[in-house]
Every structure is written in structure tokens, then in C-alpha cells.
Image (spheres, rainbow over the protein chains, first blue to last red):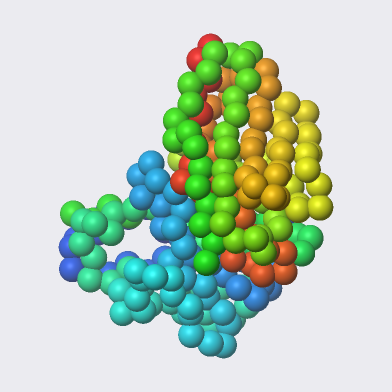
Length: 115
Length: 112
């Protein structure tokens, strides 16, 4: 299994500001994944964070809006920049473990509301 | 890239009845198919998975079937209980390649 600590668990932010979400894993992992889950929706992959290189972003997500840091093999941050109400969502970090690195484990999520 | 479709989006069943959720995938290279359960306000958690070398796997009241030729897989929950109420996500990935593609989710409601 994997223990992932994610914080903050929730926040209410003013539009135009930025929020940085932190994710700490209990042991070293090669990749960390950041997802967005809008209310009642599925998990949409924002980007993959690799240690020592730039994150890889999925279609529709850009580094200027969602800058990611990965300073070591157990930690990553996702920043939601210049927020608007459309950014209100749950953000989750995830790692993959287990046989053939297939089972996904998630942080508890950050519920972001932009007002 | 991989695309996973899931249906139905919502499902209501009476307690004790069975529930079936179906998914299709597009990438023939995918060989690992997990199912996640997400209770309200909680993080998704793995409940069962199946690899491409088997056609069916069962764990107590839940089972998953896989048809590689047709590229579809299904989750079966028997003797449903109120605590089975949650959102269920299917997913597909390739072993050794960590990226996971999730389906759109099914909200299951078990009516007591």
C-alpha cells in the first residue's frame, strides 16, 4: 500500500489568487500524478510529475496555469494559478504501487472553492 | 491514447439484487483493468482488478469479467447492501507503464 498525505484538505480562495497543494508519500516513487475531479465527474489527469524533469501535461492543461514541482522522490506540489470559479474542484495526487506498478493510491484530496 | 467508456452513469437497485457496470476500452495494449470505489467525500480505493491473462475474477460478492477480443470488462456485485452505495470507476492501464485512464463513473444507489 501507500500512505499519501495531501494538504490542505479544503480551501476557499478569491479569484485571481493562487493555491499550492502539497502531497507527501511515505516512500520513494518515480512518478506522481495530479488529477482533477469536478463535482459528480470522473478523474481527469492534469499532469505527471517526474523527479528531476519537467512535468508532463495532458491535453487542456498548461504549465502556466498548473505549475508543478517535484523536488524529491517523496514530495510534489501543484499550484492552481490565477484562479477563477471554474477551477472549483477536488484535486487529488496519486502514486502507483504494487505488482507491475498497477495499483493507484490517492491522497485524501483538496476541495477547492473559488469565489 | 486510451479511452475508457463506462455505463450506466447511475444505477439504483434494491438491497439484495445484483448490480452490473460495464466498460469498454480502446487501446489493445492495455492489460490491467482495476475497479475503484469512491464513497462520498472519500478518496477512490481499489476493490478488484483483472489482468488480461484471465477472463474472470471473483472476490466474495464482487466479480469482474474481461473480454479482450471485444475490449470490454464488467463489474458484478451480487447481494447488494446499502454500504455498496458509492461511485464506481473502471480503469485501464498497461503493466509497467504507470498512467491510468479512468472511466466516467457509475453512481450506485442501493435502496434498503
